[in-house]
Length: 360
Ligand code: IPM
Ligand code: MG
Image (cartoon, rainbow, N blue to C red; front, side, top):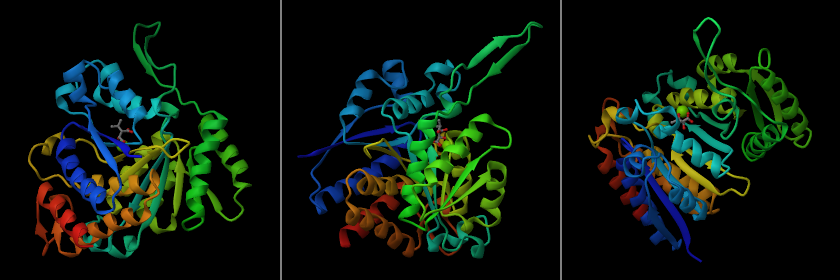
């Protein structure tokens, strides 16, 4: 039976990078006879323009019915002044929550060819291979109550809430342990248990879950220390599991170790490994339409989709190999360019990956 892939390019550079990722996906579809069918829809600012909301019900229904979703990026200055409840980012948060995509995998892998593009010394990052497992449908992103209230003195006060239930912690901890088990067998749980109640429960539950994984070495780290360790000695980490907000911040930080956030893919999975795949970077409105954005994070998200939603490890490996071959050829978009390499645009980069994949 054919598998349905819903494509949501989004805003800013989203449509440009998605066009390249779709070329790669179409080639993989043909080359490996994958029997994928594609449909397209809008999300974020593009959906606000079309439907007045950042995620229309019909789009959500399509996403529910699809076997996997591939997403570009959302947001831009055009919609910055809009009411907070219908900002483009709300569409992204809604689709994550409604599809139950609680497990967000953000691998930070340094391609050896890009060691010079990292802001850290090559010896600190050489061989870097970290996986950040971010809880994606709970915590302060979704907690209620939230809002703005007026204090007795007439001043406004804004507030958010950071709730985590035992079951939410348990299921993301399991994802962390499962991933660590098939990688370097080391899991670092990042929290702020010296201050936050939610983190204290987090730590307690992670320790309970650890009893089922005696083969995985568990450590705990406060988030401020983790931020410091990530730039001091990032190779000490194998898998990091953490909450929604800490994971958002630490994954951006980890991305720069690899040269550019333009290289980082992600997978967001539900309990059955149905997933949505998107680059970790945003819609980069400052470079939208210029044809210079790096499509590799989205192309690598396609590879994660094949691996996690469809268990097509060989096809996924081939896409990653094609990306590596293109880097070997010295082709670089501006964000990963260094002296001696050839600067290319979005489309040339996509075409080069397609050519490399075709020849594999
Ligand atoms: C990410 C992004 C989103 C987030 C934004 C766009 C809402 O930064 O995927 O990391 O904070 O989760
Ligand atoms: Mg982020």
